[in-house]
Image 1 (spheres, rainbow, N blue to C red):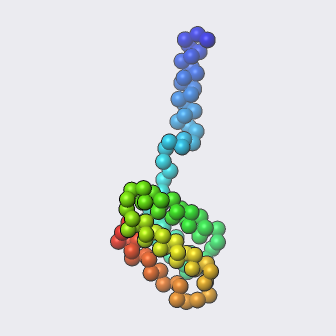
Image 2: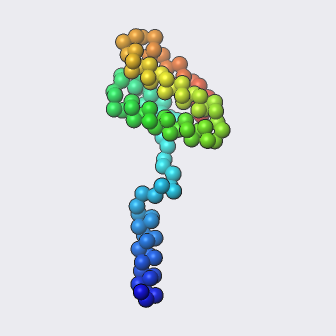
Image 3: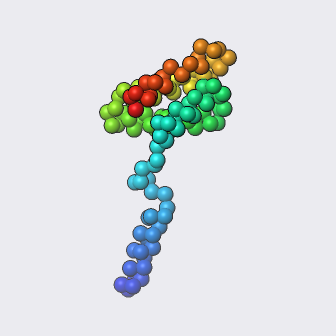
Length: 109
């Protein structure tokens, strides 16, 4: 392999590295506003697919917050996840539709 082909191979490798999904590049986490908006929608009008995706996004956030030693925010997110689970299993009961954890997420995150 001559020097020109070697350079072309390196350039192609760099090009593919930038274009292809790279696990070294962190993914974008949803914002606090997005989480709160979607969680209110889930608590009030449970749509299974949307709420399950939200639950998984919140899991990523609370794990990230734990790694950053922001345990108040992590606990608030866990509480909000609990409200989503309650909204699913107790969707016919009014007392579970209050959104108790929302102010804590706003304050701690």
